[in-house]
Image (cartoon, rainbow, N blue to C red):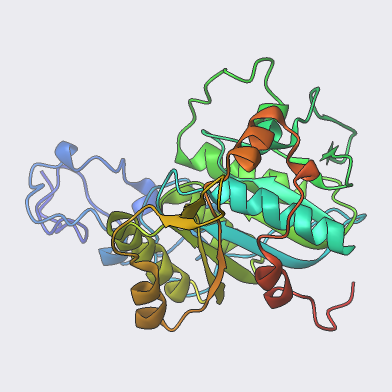
Length: 326
């Protein structure tokens, strides 16, 4: 046995270590002295083979390769230009992110803007159903053509690519991230004033892919009056701060129900926690949506563009484009 010290696990190896992790099997169990091995190649004297770009690495190292360079943003197809990208986020599921995304898209389109929707909730997509999009998407050698609604809203959702809307998508994080990048960079979006990203719940892989790889300009945060929801929303607010993307404001969904007889607003929750969250994080409440049976039925029937009302007019003003040209 060689008495040469292994620079990786500091033990006496059966074979002489040359300090190059590329020549290592990566299996410390094969070493007679595996104790004390950190499993971190940064402790190895050689950095050969490392590009410093964790996105190009096939290993799940957790991003610990020492590179401080931010991930490179993906680019659009040559025929596409987008003025502003807005992520509709919450951190919590079931609060109405897809409803807010859809309403905002409809109100922007009715105001005269060109709008697209990227449904990044791959495992629980709603946009295809809400807008009643029929048929599967098609493409050419360069990319996919988005579905287009009667108002001209362009949309891409995984349900538009499945043979059946009830077919589950059983993909792990890396594949989900790759699909979302493709939904941005390999779609013929054309010229858009706004691209709205309907985000999935949570602050995990998909959310990080969106904020690291897509050029998100602003975030719309969706919440409800519930204290349980606001606790989880606070996590998403803190994530937005960490990824350095500004939050336009809070939209409170399920804020009240209107009486059919007199129009009186009935509060669903005894204590509305949204004002507290807004004050704590220095945010503005830019919209309050009711529980409206008419709106809910239109979403179920795929006719949301026919909804007669501007519930998010304040938000539309907040996200208005100021001088950003193609």
